Image (cartoon, rainbow, N blue to C red; front, side):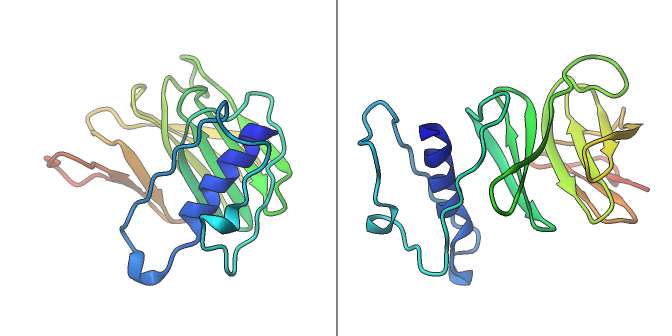
Length: 177
C-alpha cells in the first residue's frame, strides 16, 4: 500500500500541470525506507484541482512505471521491470493487467509502449518486432509484424497505427494501416 501511495503521488505530480509547462519534465524520487508514515502532498505539490486516488494492489507490484496514460476514464501504467501493463478505473480499482511475456504470437518479449483508442489497445513489442492488438478488456485479437521497421513508440487512431522512431532518422514512412 505504501508503494502504491508513493507511485500515485508521482502520478499526481505528472498529471497536474499548467499549459505553460508543456514539455517540462519534473522528476521526484522518494525512498520508501526513509519516508515517514505519511507525506502531506499539499506541502510540496500544487494539488489545486487534483485528487489523490489510491490504486488497488496488483498481482505483480508496480516497481518501475515507465509510461502512464489516461484514456476513456481509465489509467494505464506500464511497468518496465515486470513488463506488465496495468489498467485501472478512474476510482483506482484494478480493471485488468496484461502479463504475456514469451515468444508465442500473442506474447511479447519486451513491452516497450502501448496506446489505447476507443476500440482497441495496442502493445508494442520492440524486441519481438510486433504489435499485439487487443480489445478494450485486454483480450488478444491479432498480431502485426513490423519487421523492417524500427519503432520505440506507438500512436494509434481507430483507423491507423503510427510507429514512433524517437532518436534516429527513419529510412521510410513508419505507418501501418
